[in-house]
Image 1 (cartoon, rainbow, N blue to C red):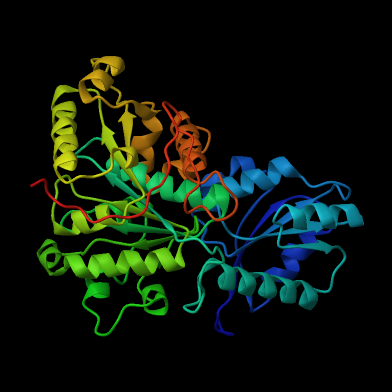
Image 2: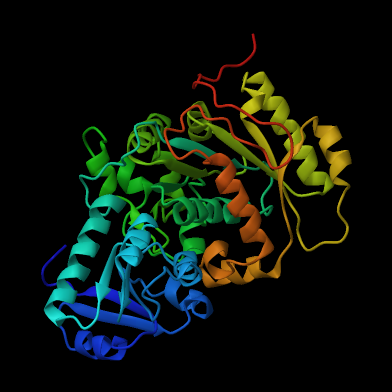
Length: 411
């Protein structure tokens, strides 16, 4: 972090002395206040789009952690939280630190001392969160690759990929990389509301061996905590993204991140197959209409020819706003595959897409966000090494990760 760069903070909550803190920080050259809100639960969109690096949350209760208010802040941003209170007890400090609060500040406090705490918190978040090139995740297990695929466009594949990545990062605090492998017409960047300086094209065109430090220089960070590798800006650059480079990207990402969510095109190509080789969970998305079900059936047949393990395949049913849907049970019977999750139709999805804000941040209390949260919990239910942990399905039986294997066609 440069000494000349002001740290962006957002102030929430209320307590005696917080107004004086705000006034003092407004005039400090190292601090930029990007927003305030007394009730964080009513300002989730403002928080999510603020770009805040640190949250100062005031609480009048000095004897217990304001759990609901902290959860509301975490629904909107992955930025670290400093609790500010005018009267506290040792029990509050212990409870706060045990629940992931970065620090607790008792008022009154000298401005320079508070600024030092903010700087320390921001630096620690950068170190732990991967904002510095040398940082690797702390888990000893390999990161898990979750690939979102559908053979038909317009079924909500990219919405699911962006929402799932966001929810994993925010709900579990894990390091998450979101890769857009829809190389010609990928929409991950626009749905995440980021304007990337570099894309996967720039990454694969670099000379030398790709390593974690080099990868860190080509990702775009999102306020949710997700790092993004966007698709090329120009469609003609897609053919220059080679299969072996994509494979190497995924191998390095698994060393660095806990979860790698991959959005894919609506067809099989070399880079898609390279991704499937390294995929722990294939999320096969379908709507309940004849064209989508027909294409999913063909996809399952193709995966069978490629000897792809069926227990890695998870069917996700995405309900649109249409009332003329096929019966889910008949579709499951036709596909010989139970749906793991069903995503409800929701007008909030269209709003989120048009605003460039992931659904869990734009509408955290929606039915879609709840299902995505359940999905994130199912894929990452363990707190320790998760390389071979069983995953409980929302609908159907449990599945267990198997070692990676190369795809090959039947003889």
